[in-house]
Length: 298
Ligand code: ADP
Ligand code: MG
Image 1: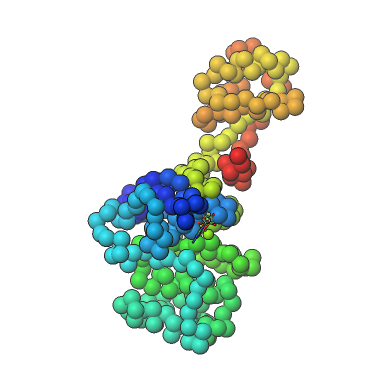
Image 2: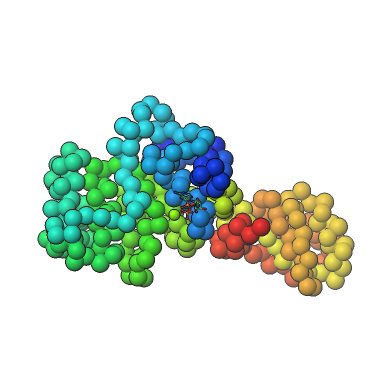
């Protein structure tokens, strides 16, 4: 798969004091939807700002499209919305986008296509100042897509929107992704990342805690709840099982975390062979939310 963006050991220190981004490295591959997930102040916007050339990095490097083109030219193939959408208030949505077309050298025919995509075609002749925040955000997305960029970058795309506005934006993001456009979005909302992203980079205080597919983040975290009449023997036997990573006591049960996914039946028959009869066996999965909280707690 083609690499769109590669970031290596990126660091940003503001005013020689605030270490906002710490040794962050990740890669964006064509056709995926990436989320940068982290609480406020974790360095999401700073990371996006650096790769978009609006924030100077302190050290490390990044490379667009395999490094074949200068960042300045590469950014012509990037659509980004990192600030509140701003257009001319007394011009209509259509006029605003036609102006963007003139600046970008894109044919006016794109305006209808993109307004349709974001569900604003019927409102194209209304002035921008009459738009709701959600409509403004959708217009910004249409504008960023006018020249059919390779990748769309969005910073907290649903901030400040009502539930209906949030749903509309998420549906549009999924629609854009389904056409093959790569997407990178920053969000402090786990639920948002889980709903729209295939991949996630988790940041906390500028540090990268996890990166990988959203599914793997869920898959890799199954664990078992076990009970038997001789808990200490159960623990001893489990400790010699190659897949067992750690064992945690919980009241009259133990929780068994495994390095890789194994079926309940396999664990059960293994224990039975060692003369352990279980009274209780349940396989559980951490929700992404539990995992996120687990990751970001100290
Ligand atoms: P996020 O987007 O995840 O909320 P930011 O990248 O905006 O995080 O901020 C990361 C850290 O860098 C925070 O501690 C923030 O206060 C600090 N920061 C961001 N921008 C600046 C700036 N222009 N000058 C100084 N510190 C900044
Ligand atoms: Mg931010």
